[in-house]
Structure formats: C-alpha cells, structure tokens
Image 1 (cartoon, rainbow, N blue to C red):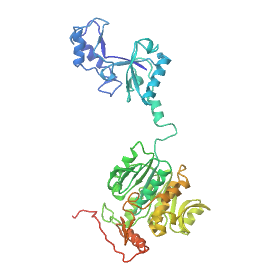
Image 2: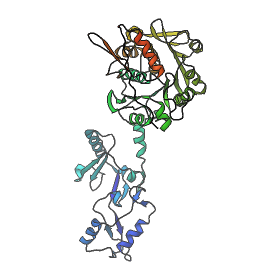
Image 3: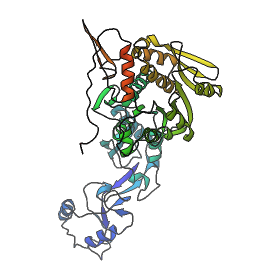
Image 4: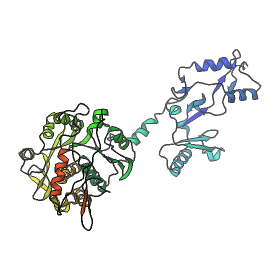
Amino acid sequence: AALRTPASVTGDGKNTIQFLIDKTNEDPRRGYGHEKVLTQIKVDSFTEKMLDEKGYTLDTVPADGELVLLKPTANLSTGGTSTDVTDEVHPSNIFMAERISRIIGLDICGIDIMAPNLKIPITENSGAVLEVNAAPGFRMHIEPSEGIGRNVAEPVIDMLFPRGCDGTIPIIAITGTNGKTTTTRLTAHIAKNAGFKVGYTTSDGVYIQNQLLMKGDCTGPVSAQFVLKDPTVDFAVLECARGGMLKSGLAFQQCNIAIVTNVSADHMGLGGIENIEQMARVKAVVPETVMKNGYAILNADDDLVYDMRRNLHCNVALFSMDENNPRILRHCKRGGLAAVYENGFVTIMKGTWKIRVEKVSNIPITYGGKAMHNIMNTLPAILATYLFRNIKVDDIRDSLTSFIPSPTQTPGRLNLFEFKHFKFLVDYAHNPAGLQLLCDFVSKLDGSPKVGVISATGDRRDE
C-alpha cells in the first residue's frame, strides 16, 4: 500500500515557486512520462488555477516551510510522490481490497482509496474506494519516495509463470513437399479430441479451436505468430512451407516435435532452390529447431528425409509404409520409436513391443486402404500425438475414425462426392509426386471412364 501525495514544493522564504519546481525536477529520479520512478512536474492550467486560488503566481516566494500544492490529484504521472504504508494497513482493509478484486473478477488490480489513513477500517474514518484499476502502476510500490520498496512485480510474474513452468505451449511443426496440410489437420484433430485448445496453420488458413480466423495460404511465420500469440491456445500445430522459411524463417526458436513428410520436386527454380537436395536442406531447418528432449519424426522411406537425422541434436522417431524396412528394424532394435503400416493396421513400435492403433479400413481418410498416401500421412500424426502423455491411445484411435475426408475437415484434399450416375473427386495435388499418388488412388476406384480436369495457378512471375 502506498500513500500518494500530489505534486508540491516547500517554500524556503527565498526562492520563487518556479525556481522550486525547477529545482525539484533536477532530482535524478524524475523523468518524462514513466521512464523513471518519478515524473517531472509540469506547469499546466491546473497548476495555474490552484496558485491563482491562493493569490499566487509562479513568481511568488512562499514562506519558509510552506507546502504549496501544484496539482489537484495525487498521480505519480503528474509529478506526485509516494510513501509506503504497507505495514500500517488494518486487516479489515486488506480483506475489503481482496473482496473487491474477487467480486470484479480481477486477479491483479490497483484500488484507489480516499481516507485519512489505513490504520483503521475505512468504514470507521469516512474513507471511500474511488476506483479499481485493471492495469495498476508499480512505480509507487517498487521505489516509493519514502519507506520500504515492495517488489510487487515478483508475485505477478510468479502467478503468470509458475515456478517450474517455462511459459511455453507444445509446438508441433510439420514440413515436407506433400502431405503437410492433411498431417497438420489430423494432428490438430487428435489434440483437440484429447482436450487441448488447438491453434493450427495450413495452406488453407489459420484455425483457432477449429474456427477459421485467417483464410488463404497461411504456412509462414506471420500466421504461426498469430497462433502463438493467442492466449486461448494451449497447443500449436504449425505447417511450415518452403516459401515462408526462405523469406522470413520460422516463428519460433524451438519446437517440441517436428515432422518431415517427404521431399520431392516442387517449386524448383524459386528462391535459389534448383534441385531437391537444396529443397531438402531448406526442409531440414524445421527438425533442426527441435529442443534437445523433443523428437524429429522422419520418413524412413525417403532417403533425403532419413539423412536429416545426421545433423539433429534431439530424439529421432521414424515412420514407414514397410514394416520390414531395414531402417525401421535397426532403429527399433536400438530401442527407437517408430510407426509403420503392417497387416492392415497403423502401428506404433518401440524396441520389441508394438501397439496396433487402428485398422486402416476404419480410418476414413484412407478410403478403406485405397489412399496409400493418407495412410502415410496418418503415421507421423499418430506418432507425434502419442509422444504427449496427456494424449491416450484411445484418444488417437477415436480421432482417426472421426476424421472424415470432406470440405469441412480436409478441404481440397481427396474430397470425393458421389452423385447418382458418377463420382467427382477434388484434390490439391500440384506436383509430379502428388499427381502420381492421386492417379494411384483413382485407379483403385470403381467406375469408367475416368476423366481428369487439371487446373493450376502460376507460382512465378511471367518475367
């Protein structure tokens, strides 16, 4: 608690009020605005009015020891001072202040009281509460003009960032050439169903708790920052594309988990990227940001992605469409974590044990196993979410069966519409590898003839 006193000067019987103001402003503790613990006294219309009411001007010489008030309010921002009176506050006044904050619903507030003192309950000395500030100033408490300084900032920081908590939220960053958006959406869906308030970015837009808040290609750092700055989000899943990384880097210094789906030819000749080896180097930036105790989840079926493990300083988990992939077998033999497609199931493996998470025929985005690329997209998603203790296998299983390929959950990704005499498929495939996977899927669908209509926007200027 601090007793605030309006800006004032004390006469010495020799000097004018203006001289005394100037002398007071020479105090090194006084500055402009809130830059220092005290604020300089400025002469304004309020000052002139108060002096005029006493018959004074700035040239008046007040008597020795005379207190001349210069402002009608006791704000530090207008040159006032403070005296710490914390040890003098009556318990009833403390109870009253705490009750006021609870009634209003504020965990931090400043309560302005007008009273002769706080040594007795203000209900007994004609005191009154003037206002409650949701963003109180700390200067009067941290460095009062008189009395003991109180570190009021420390309990506020401890409340906002409890000891043992680093103030961060889980971040899963997903990169690669194909499959990023579907993997991002599925991962976010699993986290949401496990009880998290999820924010995620995709090439379709930014979503906070499944609400589309920004529409368009939002796979760069600006969109990621939008999610990371949102106080309602406690779990972030961020799609990280080549373009944003080349132009502006990443929106975070570290992430908990990184997924690299694959690397193939796409956007060649842009941003100085002339071949897939250079593209792989760009994509490798994401797993290289994983914190030491985090995980990089890499595609063991892709040589360029698998080789990224050599430059990492974190744990590595692998996924593969082949349960007998030698890389997977070696990795699991050493106690490593992996996800594979085996005997019709998506399965998590570690060492000698395995968990069959769900049968592929029960996972809608795989279309009964026909969409092999969506089986592959499912593997890193289940692996990433399995690594969080708060996400149970049952949460993952339930989420896989409730994630439907549709304009709502996977817009533009393998959306199959069935009409009376034909089927109509919409997909975002836009590079050789993506188109090949799409053709493989279409070849497994019933119906003939099969007609493809391909449309694409340019990704570079005419010149």
